[in-house]
Structures are given as structure tokens and as C-alpha cells.
Length: 243
Image (cartoon, rainbow, N blue to C red; front, side, top):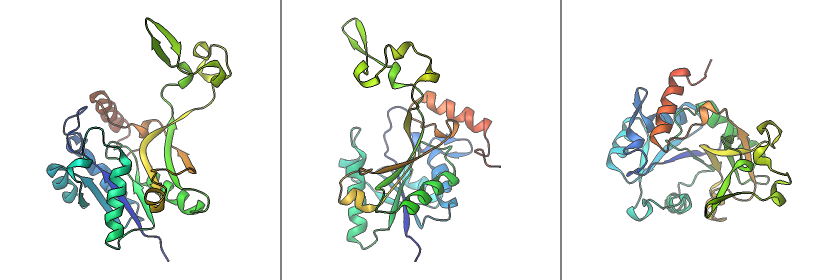
């Protein structure tokens, strides 16, 4: 029996960093349309659902073939975390007898992410199964190494990570090449079993599998500078790297 997989694209209105970000034209279409179409292009996702509180996002989502789930205003605040949004959405699906076998969490702010990358995450979670993993998360090499970060103490700066943590003397003065490899969430693709959210009350659970994406395809748009960088990369990789 084939696995029932839904994609949920959380897309709140009222972005402060880039106003109207989710429907702002990126390349030749609204930003969120890139994620909707790539999700559909996997051929593995039965339903693509945009979770939003915004009428314009609703209009664009439907135009590009996604379903829309209306997010209540109390879950669309600036400081609202992901978990309550997904608990609410999955709870409604469960109540309606529509809970799938797997949820794929896709962010509209990662427009360079390809269908093949979404498929990669789905296949990894499927292969490992519920007994071995709670979720899968895409990562990329960290843009800034945590060993080279600081905190302010009055007018002085102190290493953010102590020597007892890094086990290195002055790693902030060391060549990056000798530091341990570090990866960061890239916001491109998270996949999990519904039980991870509904029972474990977590977006990831304890056992998280990961796979590495290239830096160019991992840009996540939070600021106007991010938008400009992503547009430049789209021109460099007009087919998003597909051969």
C-alpha cells in the first residue's frame, strides 16, 4: 500500500523583513508558487496545503493549484512558533479522518529548492521508518562557524563558546579549514510522522536524520538582502541546477 503524504506550506501574512514576501514576484512568479510547484513535481505528495491567514496568499496559492487551510489569527502573530501551528492543523486533519502517513513541511522562503531534494527527504524518512527516526531535516554548511562567534560583555567581547566546549585554544583565530564541519538548518525541507507533532509535541522528535544540500540552493529569504542574493542565484542557476 502506498504511503499517503501531504505537504504543508506555512505562509503567514504580515512579514516585517520583506513586506508581502510570500507573494512578491521572484523570477517569473510569486515566491510561494515556486514551492507549490516543486512539491507537486515530486509526484509523491497527494495534497499540497498552504496554511495561511492572508487573503492574497490564499488567492495565489489556489491559482497555482494548492489547497488552503485558514490559520486562526491567534496563530499568526509575529512570535508564533511552528509547533502550535502544526498541532492545530494536524489536529483538524485528524478530527476529519484525513491524517496522512507523513507530513512534509516546506517553506515558501526557500524558492531554489528543487523537487528532487524534497523527494530525497521523503525517501530517506520512508527508508528509515518510524522505528529508527522521528523526522528528516535538510541542512547545509553553516555560513558562519560557531567557534568564531562572540557575545558582548560591556565594552568587551568574549567567545560565545567556551574553551571547555570547543576543546581548542583560540579557535576564533584558527583557519576555518581545521575546524570541525558544522551544518545549519536551511529551512528547505522537514519531513516527519504526524505522531512526532501530535504525540511527542515536537517538530522533530529526538531522532533526526539529515541530508546535506548545496549552499546555492539553500538560501532562505528573511531580509531584502536575502531576496537580492536569491534572485542573483536564480539567474546563475535558471533551471535550479537540473541537467
